Length: 386
Image (tube, rainbow, N blue to C red; front, side):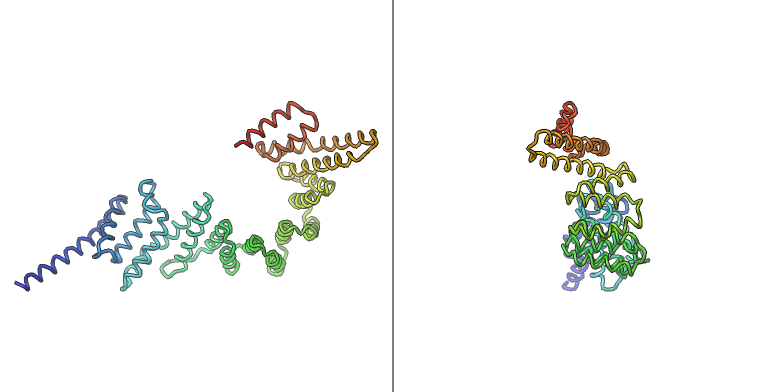
């Protein structure tokens, strides 16, 4: 009797194990059929049973489930995971770890499962980046990189993924991480000089102007004749407030490329910010000649005229002679009038821009254009209350 009892016990135990493993097998079929809710239910049962909770196939099936969740358009299925591809990867890796015989790893390689997962992560990362979820995009691209650098990925590595990860990290404010990825791009000679520019921008964001400047100054030896290096140096000097250095490099760049409106604009803005209004007006006028539809140039020259006229008003208040005072005020009003067409053009290019509207409000008030003043004031008040 004792032997019979033991035999029955063994049979019962085996049946229990097979029942739970059957849940995993049925879940795989349900995933292929798109019945992800039923598949999840079956896998939840398998995961909660000690007999199948740590079975490698349970984790493999969960990897397939979460990957299917990402591809599904059903909002009910989307609730299964906030990061379905991250969960898919974690479960696949756990399955490989538990399968000591290596069958799961071979299955992933021959089925090119990680190739498909990497593509999904690229898509997810791109969508997250476009939506402004830079932290999420970085995580997706980092996971994609882990996969494609592993021995379970079949094919050639896409070097663009390092650049994508760098951009996501930069936008997420993780400049040290961004530098690491952009340095990888530079090492792989991906996109030429561009990764170096991104590294410089990251150094600048970290407040290390010296490293940013040193890197840019080293680039002409690596990329002789590349005009963009000078432009990047100009941008760095402007952001760092090194106006003299910026102007020196702008003079070189303008001599080399006089038809580049952005160079005249950059120089004009430096003069505007340092209250050298006549120089600013001359440069911005040239920028507008080269590119009339640029809002920033139109607004900049309008602001230069307004600021110049305002200074003239202040100086006029110190004049004691009435006739000379009136002449000075009239001259200042003439300068205000010169600002008007540029500020109106800026408003035309960007109708809801607060700064152009404020400039127009002041001009219409100064020039006693009452109807236009009232209309602009009403629009500005409406926008500022939002």
